[in-house]
Length: 162
Image 1 (cartoon, helix red, strand yellow):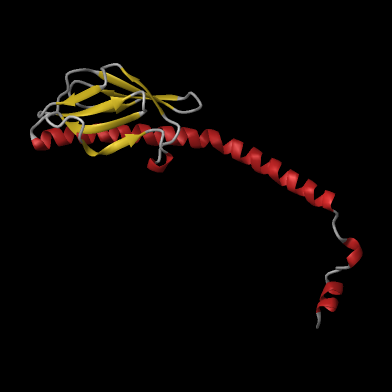
Image 2 (image 1 turned 90 degrees about the vertical axis):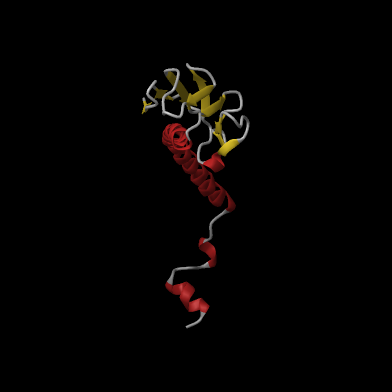
């Protein structure tokens, strides 16, 4: 069997080809459908990134508390609301992050598009060696669609996601 007979079996002939206008129209429809599909996914993805950021932030607060208890010295979580970042550091080593800086705008870190709106207790959340903290604090995070979630830190050092 040769290519000519295969073409006849599949009803290929030179007269039934598609025009350039038909091909461009098909591509335009495909691009439109792809754009609509991606717009439909941006909302849920933004929501998921916010939830991930809130859980990670709460986890880092808990870890900072455990570090203060384990080492027997004060540990703080420092917020940088202008740069949308935070870090955990020991009080006696200011500016030296214990495990790196968490950038809420960095998609490579799994966040992307998250704003650190602010904190009711200031930019330094300090845990004492007994696990307690001096202030009741609520930290608010916001995604690029305006949805907000909060993490509260109470005097006993307990962390709650709202």
